[in-house]
Length: 81
Image (cartoon, rainbow, N blue to C red; front, top):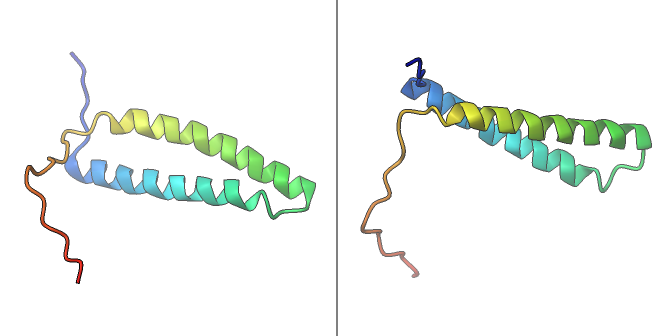
């Protein structure tokens, strides 16, 4: 059985890359609405499509992370005042 797991630091680094790529994807998608140049808009659309594909591949790798963050049973009471 050749099941390769990511080390803890690799999992955290990959998580940061996924977050950054998601933020870039959202920015490219939103900025298409304010861009008037059709060539630039086409380039941004290509970036969006490639980013979606890359995120899918990164998430498949992230599934090999060796841990999951536990969800605490009791949560702190929010301070309103």
